[in-house]
Length: 59
Image 1 (cartoon, rainbow, N blue to C red):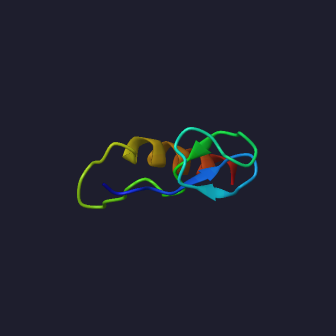
Image 2: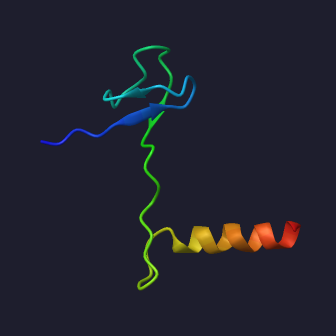
């Protein structure tokens, strides 16, 4: 069994608790970025292209 580390959105502290932050009770999320692969279509590629397109329009 492996444990993952999580980061609190509110106080930015790291914890192993998956439910909520033990310090402030805030929501915790995984601090790891989504997987990236140039060679194949992955589940977040459409979001990345949309973000890039929106950023180019505002520049």
